[in-house]
Length: 153
Image (cartoon, rainbow, N blue to C red; front, side):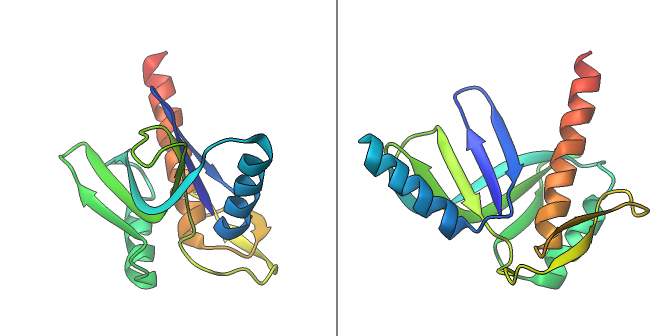
């Protein structure tokens, strides 16, 4: 599962092995017990990745192979590619711009551990069975964040 957190001035992406249904159910219980308002609705979320990021072509191929309709890529300009995901939006209000978006690109949840490739093809990481697309997208986002922090320094 991918969890995208939108705040007033930032965005953060996390990779979680929990299913969106389990995570949302826990969040709803927390909201009920703490007396918070919580709106959960189907939605879309987008973010940008650098167009020259290594591994982007591999992501395109995985999206084409899986053809789930949950994720799409679109060139914004020569420097950036927009990633759009379908999933669920959680916020205190239906029109709130800050909140949490969760999605699962595939429903592999048999608990089997498998070796999942990372950006460096020589490396592999052990994760509970999951979508290669989710993990690759997360690694691409991390790589983009690392590039951005080097440029700022």
